[in-house]
Amino acid sequence: MTRSLGYLNGRFIQLSENVLPLEERGLQFSDSVYEVVKVYNGVPFTLPEHIERLNHSATSILLDLPIPSEKIMEIAKDGISQLNMDHGTVYIQITRGNADRNHEFPENSQENIIMIWKTGLAGLSGTISEGKSLITVPDERWSNCFIKSTCLLPNVIAKEKAVRNGFYEALFIRSGEIKECSSMNIFLVKDGIIKTPPADQSILNGITRQKVIEVAKRAGLVVLEVKLSMDDVEVSDEVFITSTTKEVVPVTKVDQFSIGDGKPGETYKLIHQLFSEAIEEECRAVIELQSD
Ligand code: PMP
Image (cartoon, rainbow, N blue to C red; front, top):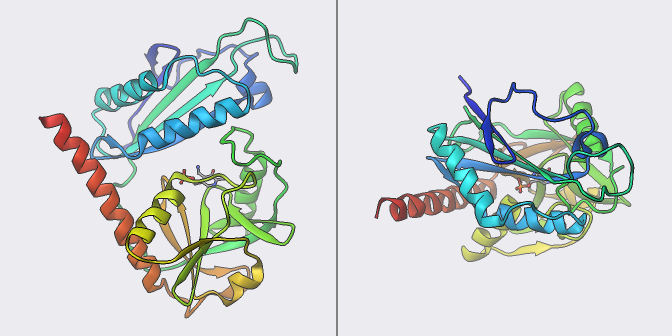
């Protein structure tokens, strides 16, 4: 059974509590940024990287974090302890606060800091034997997808289209280039070389994406951050997608095209193994540190 805990502006609360006024800028304008961190064995994996990206997202929308990064990390860990969480997620959202509904920034509002902890997610998952499928959709999002803002309506609609048509995820295509999925980054493999779209302003630079690139390069694999099109997808030997909650997921079908031999490939299996080792390393390291 999933257990949960909430937090708002200094107070731990139940998720069912009515705590925010109706005129709230995150609610009315999606005027907010967020992060999702996965917890393994009670340890929030790559928490500093997530908080750094939260800072970057906040700065990019001219939003001040109401409390320092260190304090946010402390609260995240506090919630994990309070819930006695083994595996799960921590959701962190900062909004521009409560104010009368006007487009311009309010003069004296106080940012809201919201956190949600949920247990119930599996820990480190094994390799997936059945590849997943992607449906391509036009990228109708704005030009600043590097910001992890809660303006997620195009992502939500794209994912719904995927699900309604029997696909696992939706792949955004913009100006003939593949970009990313509704909530996951994408990698192609051709002749042993791993390729992924560059982390410019048009995609979210996933923390999992960065970790996968790091572990792959460390293992001696070639990773290229290059512009890619559906032509590249169609001739690729392997495709896999990544995110914090889903980790590394093999893809064997994109629209009507079957990828490689239609089964998850060896590069996926290797990346999955390397990524799992990175999680084990970091989580064990933190556990060892805490027990000193
Ligand atoms: N792209 C988008 C649009 C996302 O929402 C996510 C999930 N946050 C990702 C990529 C993957 O990012 P991460 O690995 O940091 O979870």
